[in-house]
Amino acid sequence: MTRDSVLAILISADNYVSGEKISQKLGVSRAAVNAAVKQLRESGYDVVSVTNKGYLLKNHPDILSRGELLGILGDSRMEKVTVFSSVESTNTTLKNMARDGACEGTVVISDEQTGGKGRLGKKFLSPSGCGIYLSYLMRPTSGLDTISEITAWTAVAVCDAISDAYGFECNIKWVNDLLMNRMKIAGILTELSVEGESGHIESVVIGIGINVNEKDGDFPPELSEIASSIALQSGVACLPRARLAASLIKQLDTLVESWPSCRQVYLEKYRRCNITVGNRIAVHRTSESVPRTGTAVALADDFSLEVVFDDTKTHEFVKSGDVSVRGLYGYT
Image 1: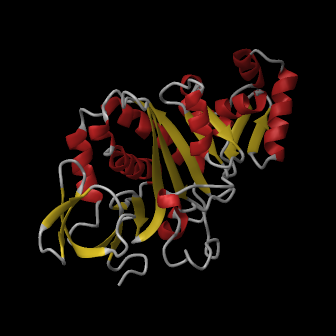
Image 2: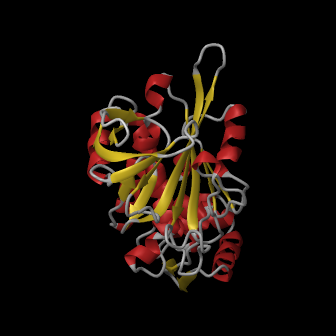
């Protein structure tokens, strides 16, 4: 679309860009460029035009669009990125694309999810104009013995993306919650497709939901003491979501390139960011009717949580389940 391509050129430009240069680069008429600029202005973009200089993008609204990402990531990377205004679930959409043969690095991102999913069947609130809802396709050659670590690696990638895009630091609650000031601002849902007979991993869909610009009152009562947004916790009124989305895609690309040989790098970062170790916890497993309480004492080299449980006084390694940390999310 000419509008997205013109926007991408204006975003990447350091100064005025002439209409003639834009038309030549895109292979379209000057009239088409003028029409695209008019559409951008109607959408809230502050595009200044000066005779003999051209166009300059001074300010733009927080719109998560293909044009915004194109201006940061470039044509080549955007060939594998699909941007929607609304989907039921980015994970579901990408899983369907994976079954149709989509290649590794394919990304689905949406401004809104009408049926966002979290871990253990929970819903993930995904309103329009507030957050980032992104799914990334991975086709690893490693086996099932290591793939369980991918969620922890992704948590590190999200922390790095937020730091790169905005300069803010985050913490990780084992295994997949991202926190700022002890409030949840992001979650991760990883879904695997495995070939039944061989056990070969056909695909891994990494789903990430980040609360970016939600305001006070945007969360329902049952989440108001648990969930927050980067804007609320940083005190910044509005953050550009496209910048974070692009940074996240770059960090996930790095993750795929690093998998699984750079485990130690991701493990050290995960340990630095993790706030679960040293705290009293409760471990909730679907196979157990009552949560088990204990103290988290360490993170093992495979990213499992070493726990001394109250009932047995023994050290055990937790690789799955939901963990509540005392002092977080109402757990006392």
